[in-house]
Image 1 (tube, rainbow, N blue to C red):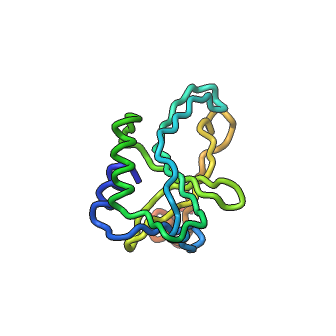
Image 2 (image 1 turned 135 degrees about the vertical axis):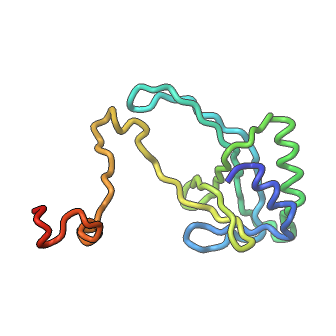
Length: 155
């Protein structure tokens, strides 16, 4: 999900809920302690220089049960961050404290922001000798296409 999508959703929702990939809700007394721009400049394992930029939200729980973050307040924080930090309409990455700080993608479903699992990947598979994944084909599909059927003389 990108920043503009989050802003649109915040304008049309009355409460903020975030759900972890395991289905648990982030406690309702969470705070968004940071909205930021995170830039990454790196060399991949194939020697290619790369740059990435994400908009980062950091969610935090405290023992402050009297305050709740409302959608309009988060929208204000985002707008201020855009003007002060020059945020682009980048992908959102969410940090949330579990046993360690986890980084999640963001989606939206049924009125709830969904934290999605992220995976690492090799960006230079062709340089590392990692074969492309071949599509799996069912033998029954190949036979039904008429390419070679019993008694057709092709085998």
